[in-house]
Image (cartoon, rainbow, N blue to C red):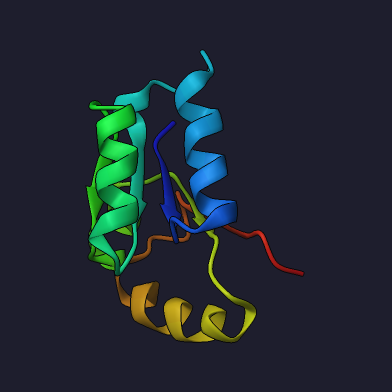
Length: 98
């Protein structure tokens, strides 16, 4: 299963690190997008096989599950951005926010 995490802040970064350290999902099947290169570079440095991008759509289209780890007021904006690239017959979207 390929997982995309949109947002590499505290929650998204922790989720990416936890998945990369585990044995269930191969690190090469983890995609993380974030507007800031600094957080992506830190993840890539720690886990060279992780896939990083600043393009949310690029991350989402590659995944079976898309996790939104963005601020609550950004959720709708990100969903509107990735919606045209999603295939809801095979992809799942989850959010870290309630």
